[in-house]
Length: 287
Image 1 (cartoon, rainbow, N blue to C red):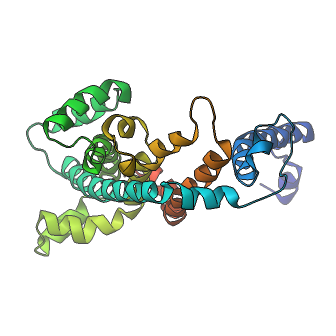
Image 2 (cartoon, rainbow, N blue to C red):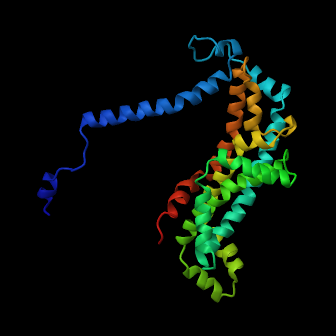
Image 3 (cartoon, rainbow, N blue to C red):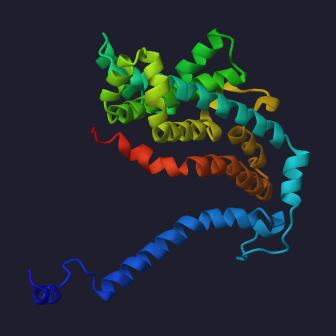
């Protein structure tokens, strides 16, 4: 095509100024709607309780750190945070290890019951927590694990492992089997191939599953409410209910606790963020 013809050609997908304005206005409104609850919680955490419960709208009035001081020094929040951290880290470590080995086996080996196992993993994701609490409670009671952090770790693994195994299987499918064959020729067995060759290439997928496993355990409430009875063994999700009793909710302490709860999750997200997009999409297409 000549230079003159290229100059005359008009772009096909250029938006009109009105359409561009409407799109940007929609994005701004959607962003404000998404940010408003978070901003309200953060600002409320610095307000005295009397200003939170009033109907008067204000950004921040008489800012104070007393809410944070009270939660950290006068409540069992530090103990609850430690319990949650133990449960979340254990769930993440065990869940990633089990999911990675399971996903690799499902991706590379054709063994009896493989299809049935994949189907079981899929079916377990269809049941809501409210249905699973009773049978899992009965199992934990028979094992003597009620009122222990171990019961929560096992319960959270039943959520994390099936989903993460499916995700990692898809990710391992996207890694060429020629790498396995080359490692085998170099004298590596199945485990050495998985550990030395495949696992380093699967870091984005591992990051996604680790992030999902951590969040599954960090903020869960239903299982913690059913399995834990002693106040010293509460997790954060369960412990925060103590700030909202039926007749006198303490919103100032609840908002301060909510802000502090998001910090560990934000730290985990910060370290995993560069792998999240590639890890979520790589397993979607086999190549």
